[in-house]
Image 1 (cartoon, one colour):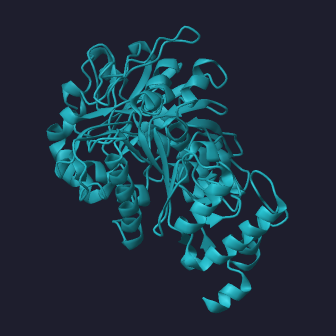
Image 2: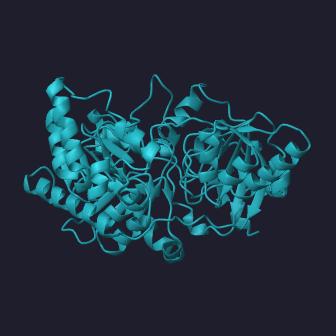
Image 3: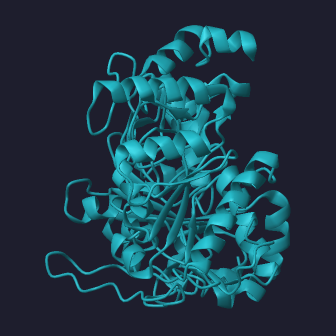
Length: 508
């Protein structure tokens, strides 16, 4: 191991195999692990822990933990831990099908949390204490500080508050990542000082996580890469969504509400949000900045196109081709990047101060602008709310995007009433599908419904939604609904596999 990876020499004798480090974690413990959207997660210790859980359960011995992370983990770690029945409780986000199945079966208790809030709960003893923190690192400084890799997430607070810390030194992560991070921990309530981030470029903390080196109980050396993201390139529908949003933003500039620099941008994770960000490459906008959670392929495409000046996030999550392109050149980008703790990247105070344009993805939305981001059919968890609520409530412009239909037209993404509410109409400004864009600002509910129907609904469902709204309006009310029919589309989808009315199905 190069000495510059563990610069505090007294820690070098704490290097142990992953299995020995995993033995520090016992049944019933609360464990904080690094990792934010498939980036920077500890890799060897979770795998060893899952193997140990399988062996323990085969002997009839209990081994279950509460696992807290920043967001989702890569390398199938959530899958391995779920299938080993290691997880009793999982906080605050996940995206793995095997874990999702265990959550929806009630085997794992999943706490779906705004990503800015988890460490606040830890600090105030509403959650915790953290028994063991497992943190992936580029290296350890001469003072014992932990240098994160491709994400910060909640790692800093986990390490600071944990009774014991296990550090995974990942030799595949470039040492040049050092200096990219900005670790700032807010002061304690109720006398908290303002967080001094006033631009996306603001550096206000340390380039490492400060910990007492005596708490570092074990160091594991690993050589495993982050998982690649599974984002897809833009398709005609996502390109149309981007086009509608670009046209809207150009009109906002024409009205004098913004300049061609716009406001700092935030984009959620995933194919649609990533594709929408690609729309800025051919736009008239320039000198852009980002203040976001996850820096995806589109972030670096915008850098390379000369459109983006600076990007602040909490993780870097890339496809395999983009990872292979970016990481060998990370020093070329480093002066234009910051990775922060997620409570800072997602902090309402900063989001409101900077006046972000937040672009996030909906599973479905309804006539009045309420958005469901998490639950399929109102009952089954998909991934979690993530940071979308942090941004939607506090952004200058809160934008939600989705394709107008799913499952080949069997499902409409625009419904009379959402089956689960993550973002109320009060937090949603703009809705966009490939059909068009609905600007809901300063509109009453009845006005919102007409704009949504006219601009966002797929032709297969437009007549049915118009009929529902007109009949609901005849009944009266500030927010008209036919309560006994409001979720009928979801019932039909559950029982018949499609939301399409029978007559429309014959036509389609």
